[in-house]
Image 1 (tube, one colour):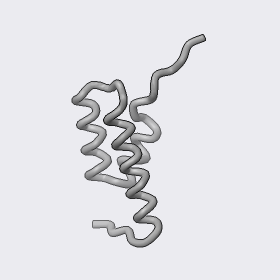
Image 2 (cartoon, rainbow, N blue to C red):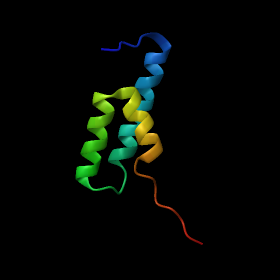
Image 3 (cartoon, rainbow, N blue to C red):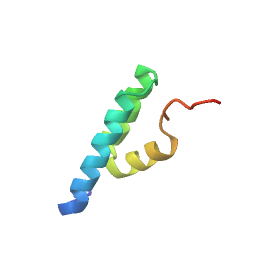
Amino acid sequence: MVEIYGVGGFILLVLNVWAIVSIIGSAASTGAKVLWVLLILLLPVLGFIVWLIAGPKGARRTV
């Protein structure tokens, strides 16, 4: 198990909380939200990176 201490751990915690709040507020289905949150909780670093790349995006505006 990887243990992260100090400022790096705090930054990771803040980023993960931000990601989870964004996931819960997204328009994704409930199942997708649950899977994303579980991924971030079980694999904090990798889960956040994967969510950042492939996660639910905000609504896109069309002109």
